[in-house]
Length: 346
Image (cartoon, rainbow, N blue to C red; front, side, top):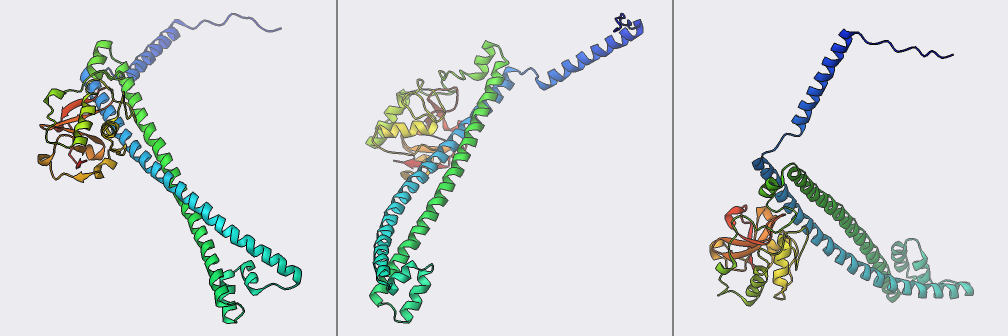
């Protein structure tokens, strides 16, 4: 029968030791937790959130640029596939005719050297030998050489298409990585803001996740002078101005109700019938170059932040732009941004 003895009670000294050990463990645990998740000040939280949002916005433009390249590769693949199909049809038609001749000659017990050539595993070598031995006429040799050339061209086109497809897949993988990076930055910003009270969150996040707050230093659309610029620039500026303080920044968005920085520029000029790429990096080479900011006119495209940001010049050293996550389309001093890398006029 199993024993049901009452467990032995620990001594008073043992209880004291265990109690002290437990207290120490709790204290250490509390210290570790405090070290792992320190209380942030509003200033520290704002600094972290702003950095995360800037990084996420820069990643968005890298994503947009990779997407532009991927779409160009898709177009190239489509053209190559069309050409491959056309070339394959030509080769198939000639080979079909050759097969019919071979079948007919085989039934008669003799195959013409020309047909032997095309049925050879090495038609180019056979052709050279056949011409040297006067087994085929020069006209036949020219016709067969043309077919061999078509087959070689078809093979090169297939190899090129395979290479383009591989490059496209690489870009797709890169795009996924960039997008994941941007989303990770935003999740971190959210986690930082979640540690604060609602009042502190509003102060540190400036409307984060709502997009209803104008950026600091926002100017007024009333200060923008549209005289002396092209009709396209006027139309683009009027379109962009209508979104100031209204449309929020949003990942990969190109209007009409939300934008990222290059999406705003693309959408604004689309209202004037001008097609532009959805990428701050690609916008560095559109239109014509403007030598310096002193030569810039309202409506010119200004790329800064090492190519990672873009907006429309609003005059008086101001930039009309979709700044970053948490803000609406705004007009800000260019001094808020990094070095200008390109000024382009449409």
